[in-house]
Image (cartoon, rainbow, N blue to C red; front, top):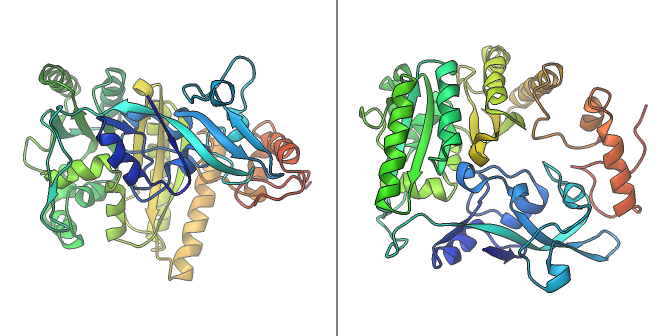
Length: 412
């Protein structure tokens, strides 16, 4: 199954239509108010449901692409038979040119249509999307065979092994990790509640945790998944913080998880954050990034230029049965303070340098000529190929190159 979407369709609107047919799509973590077309065609693409629905760039089944010269290019099966069921035909594909891993950020034209893969919505047949109450304490009808776990492990070693197995067994719709403070924010409804949870000793009870949402179509499937999850947890010495009463997810948190609204909770401590790192590779590499990033982040925390998360602020998810994973390090700062903005920039530059020197993969926010050039000499001069693509598809420079590259040759 697939959906064909156009500009200005939001994740919320698309979800509302798909639920009528017991289907769902991959919604990027930016939230329900954002464009799935923009994410799938042009910009990164992780989300909270990535263990189940994957990555935006891996879900594209075809596009209608207006090139900078005004020509219309259609990729996928649509151009041959009028249907969008396949993103690639026999022979070479332009998918990598179109967006590659991170996307061209609008630097190669405009996308007016996009076909994306759909997934089965794991809920009973008579389930309806129903809400009640008032924000922030609204109610949501949880599907019968759903359950959230917060699995706490003693160290990165046991965490990593458990995370591999949970993803490999395809047990979860969501399997993600954040900072200890992030856990307080995710499962509370106000800033006051989050602060009270932290002051009440929550951080002392958390080691390395995985938030897992098991969502099954049938009771039999649910029992299998939950029993196997318990076996994996016990195998690596983990404890469920929900079962022990440390964390208490409310019905609304289930709804916000699948709507990709939990990420918005981070703004309760600051109206601004940015991420470093983010290389797409193995689960092991993602864990290594978390370990190496901590002392760098702590250095800038001590300077009081970024938020104090003890250096443990991360967000991690797996894809496609654990075949891939990425870890980024969200960091809050004060956008009204020149000192904080400058300090965050220094932290990001040092993080990018670490990614290069420690072979941790290309981070998310590598945009513009200068930043691409920084990586060029030690990454096979890949920006030269980007510029060749830019020259071929946009020789007059009609599309904004600010977040991509210009067509000019690399400055020596």
